[in-house]
Image (tube, rainbow, N blue to C red):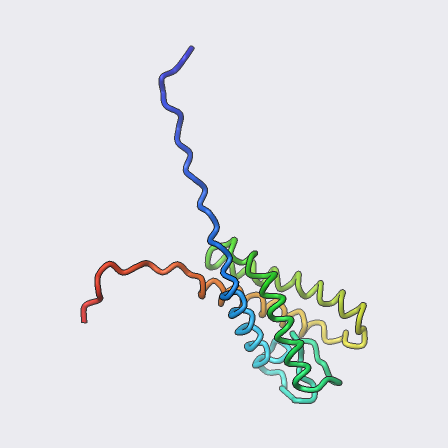
Length: 158
């Protein structure tokens, strides 16, 4: 039997917003700056120029310019990994995604550090917290920078 009923229309799946690379890099730099201000991922850690951390991991034998270059280089690399994933979720979900990606980045960081410079292992709780917070902050900043703002059709009254 043939039915003359029209087929139900499927709603098109909302498309993902395009990745905004300038916003991703800004978010990475701002997130990296926050992690410099919050050394080792916690606000009560003592900041000393002799042991500036790189994403929560103390780097005692490197000079300040080298530590800052490594730290912000990692922040930009992490932002390039985190931003495409963070855009998948809406506002609050994006934050949790960012923290989750921060955990994955910590695991990758720990593996690389164990292979290249095992003497830097030891402050793992601080490095873990720093990576989680970096992911959370950077995802929040990226989401804020790329938020769709409604257009105003008329000027605001004074």
